[in-house]
Image (cartoon, helix red, strand yellow):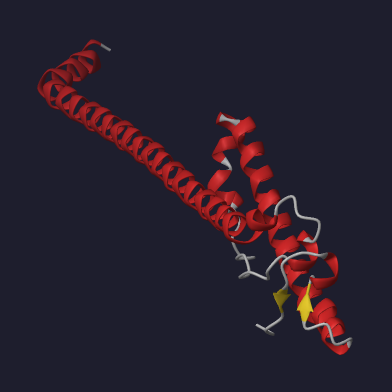
Length: 177
């Protein structure tokens, strides 16, 4: 047994430095790989967070632009077509037919999902404004449809080319436009 033990000790004394060097090299490689993976994972998380932030900013900007377009269209319609007839008895009948509001104008919910977490009240207000715009679009279109398809043709057929004369207000002549 002493001879075997001596052989093992001899072998270890000659090969141990090389064995320790190999194990140390392997451990260094493992630690470097782990550190590289952690750093890469950190960069991927940082990039994902930055991308999400940029996406939220872009979505919010698109929503603000859409909201501004909605407000601008309805305010212009109000100023040019509704306000001149406000508080007049013949407003509904003689309200001019104006241009259509853009029915395709709407918010993209994918742009606004971040508001569910961060500001749900703002999201609800934005959605409410979108609903109000859709209602205004419907009312403008319905007024146009009624005037052009129903009211004016019947008035013309009855020989009433100047709408509003019987009501004692300034007449509006139907031009068919």
